[in-house]
Image 1 (cartoon, rainbow, N blue to C red):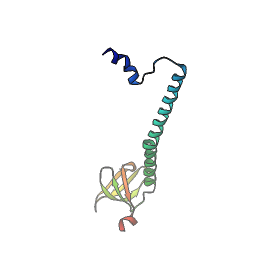
Image 2: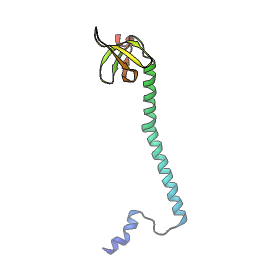
Image 3: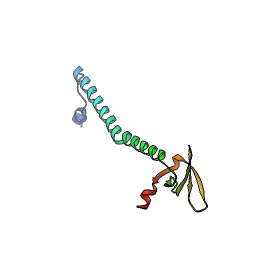
Image 4: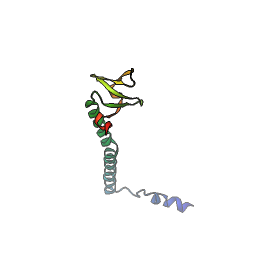
Length: 115
């Protein structure tokens, strides 16, 4: 049992003795590891999110009268008017609703809907 406790630090990979070169080697390894984690987060999370936001902004800028649109609440309608901050959707023959532009989830142009 005592023999196991003596070998436990070796089994866990804890360095025995405090050499100066071993400490700086561990720091370099730690910095490389953190750098790799940051790169992975950037390419897997941050970059795709930025692309998605840019695409959504472009979609809202190109919004025009006659486009079929779907809101984030799932309401389908045709764009009747586009204002600076809002969009008016015709959802029925007599019903028009005004939404903030950011509430538009997707747009299907009239040309795409016909095809």
